Image 1 (cartoon, chains in turn green, orange):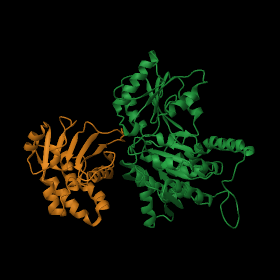
Image 2 (tube, one colour):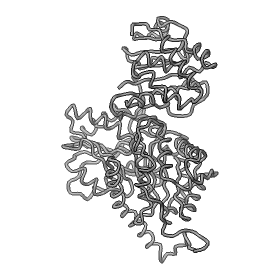
Image 3 (tube, rainbow over the protein chains, first blue to last red):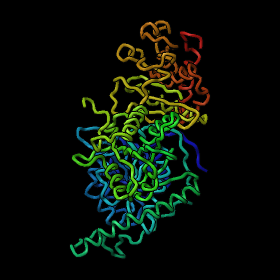
Length: 392
Length: 184
């Protein structure tokens, strides 16, 4: 039976990962994800989990060790943040190209510089095009649930891709709150053991990570793109099974207060929870505003987005990262591009918020919704704005 | 929803306080958050930590700027930090100090309810160290009546093991010895 617990979310994430019986965990500590591998190392040391915990000397090695372990047929897990994720960069597209179903939790934190240990989502956006399944959790419960779902999605024979699960650093990692923790039997019945297609073994030699000459490279990139797109079906199936077993609903985009909404916010991660409070308040005052929480980032949920924005006149995409010199924040860029060829599309504007731990309060979302109300009449001149910049 | 800000110094256990308080509320089936002021902490430097508590799921995830309650673990902070910043006028200020509630009200200029207890003295007697975080939990519970003091026993036992009974005793003494500026 699931049990209601109170716990720091990072520790709950570690407990949920342990319930998935990973066989190899390789990680290097970096704020703010540190409590996840730290707690997993406790769980292994206490004998509660039979896994190899590899204390590596860098994140590059952490992910390399996970690749080796996953290639050998082990269920492999790692976690990191910011510069640690950046240091993995060389191995990240290799893990997906080699079809290794590694699960990684990212405690999202700003990329340096200036050096900043606080939350934004620039770290994962830096890895956007690497061919991993990428998802965002809004709260502690979703971190637990999605950690368990991630292994099942990653290891499905039709997928065999790594997954990164994102939770906002500090805003989620360091918060104690109530959650439902499934028990071992429930997780065991939901998540079968990992059955790899091929394994690295001296008795039956296979090669993984070989050279791809120009005459095969286009095809291998096409294959990688196709498999990532097709993972959508498995993701939806796994979420359906989750709903059946645990009763909690997961969708690529979660719609809140969207009935009759002329204005809609698009959020990713924990900001959606605070934004929901602002949307509820304004709905009470008669403002026709709704909220779309984008959970699935890769593969991007095109069809869900197009359906969700029907009838919306102004869509405000909230980004927690900047694409310097680009068209706006990364989520904005994707959303606007996804809607560009639609006959009836909302005007899409972009507010970049909460960079490097800058707090975003309910009042800030109320102000942003006010800007969207103005945009119903007069379109803003700029495509995007970094919200709340002093002196501008 | 009730929002609480704790003031302490790095090493005094403010983060443990918010964790214990959140777990106590969760133990009762309530909803609660406990979180530190995000970022690096230095031993001895002023730090803050926060709680939210409600009977329904808490969605807001921003910082706390207008607390209903402020708890001060170290009396010296009253001269270095504006401990009543944003504190609601009808809120409660709870301070570990030898001073009376009236003296603290005068010193801080706070017009709402002030409650004081010599938590350092209690902690020294019961725990042997002037670490007041668990002691001040008792003061907070008495002043706010948000949770029952018995509900804190399980979280404290899980956290402190064989030292739990002494922490529970210190907490209970602060609960009983707290003095108020107004009847509460």
